[in-house]
Structures are given as structure tokens and as C-alpha cells.
Image (cartoon, rainbow, N blue to C red; front, side):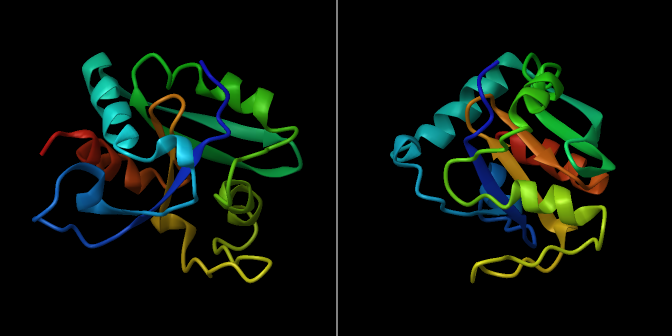
Length: 157
């Protein structure tokens, strides 16, 4: 299990039947990860699919956050170690680029709505948000209803 600081923000959109995988269900936001340009995201998805997909959930309690459940879909080996990786990452909650994941965790328990700080774009509803852990092939959401959508996004077609 690698560090979880490379989180790719995803925003749910109306399904686009002309596209496949994550592009069909989500807008993948650019956060400037030069290491992940030139086809790396598809390579990570291919390796994750080959290893097998699983789902799990865990409860976040502590780290100054309101108690809530985090839902995971992804690499069958990585999803089961993600809660421990989260516990190791949470004290600093450093991410490369602006992912708004920690903001969502802080705000979800308070208002169910995330408003960006420092002139970043407003996100209408955390329920439409997910993040893809580029190091471990795991998609993360705070909304249980997005789990089947994320499962469908991992499918090849």
C-alpha cells in the first residue's frame, strides 16, 4: 500500500454513452500531476481491473472530523488496506495539487455542501464527488449511492 497523497478529483455527470469507463460517468479534473500524464490513468485502471475490483467502507472518527463513513471501490487488495493508509495520512492530509478531499471530509458532516476557499471553484454537492487514489487504484466517495456508479466506471465498457 502506497501513500494516498495523489488523489484525482472526480465529479459525477450525466452518463455519456459515447464514452467508456470513468469518462462515461465522471468529469476527471486536472490537478497538474505531470507524473500521471500520457496514459498513466488508463494504465492504472488496466492493472486495477486485472487484479480485481472490490468494495468496502470504513468509518472516520477523529482527526478533528465529524464521524462519517468513507466508501471505497477499487483494487481488491488495496481497498482493504486503505483505512490504515488513511489513518497514517490524516494527521498531515497532504495532497499533491488541490483535491478538496480533506475539505469535503470537514464540511460533509457540517453542511453537506462544500464551498471552496481561496477562490477555488464552488462544488455544488459533495454527493456528486469522488476521488481516485492514483497510487493504489482505489476510488473514494462519501456518498454510498455513488458506489454502483464507481463500480460501473471500473468496467471496460
